Length: 115
Length: 112
Image 1 (cartoon, rainbow over the protein chains, first blue to last red):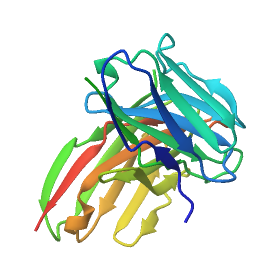
Image 2: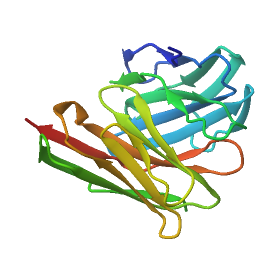
Image 3: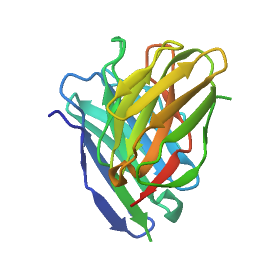
């Protein structure tokens, strides 16, 4: 059963530290999304890529967040420096655009706590 | 600004009851509406709706879309404790990128 894989599952670190979250999309999917979920804001789109090219990162604080897709099997979301308000669950999802009726599939998320 | 509103935000019922969850939206360039179920981890896909009035069904769950009134409902009949979860509604905007706008979710609790 194809799955989106995210690592690490949990991360606790002190403010000011760099945090890198990784995502392996479902093989064959051409679009990758990064979301952040908090109790207050719900699920918010941070950035997404199609065919490894960044399409939209307007949901991301640009001064500290960066998203890349170095190859088709790996997407990364980096926070540097991290702040306590970045504490949230970060989800990666992948999909196949250009095909009607194909939903996004989510990974299990990275639960990030910044102390 | 695109908006997806779910109601109620929280619902507690007894096992065996039937529940109806609501989702209304205001989105430019609507393409489809999706329902996801979120337990402890990843949201898992339930339904994708693109046409008005056509019910989608999977076991005890069903959903329908009204594109004129801009809403959708998710029905669960004969609820079980395993149905306890957060149910998320999302609307996909057109443009080919599958960009989703999510509602706040409905937290459903089924008591035995």
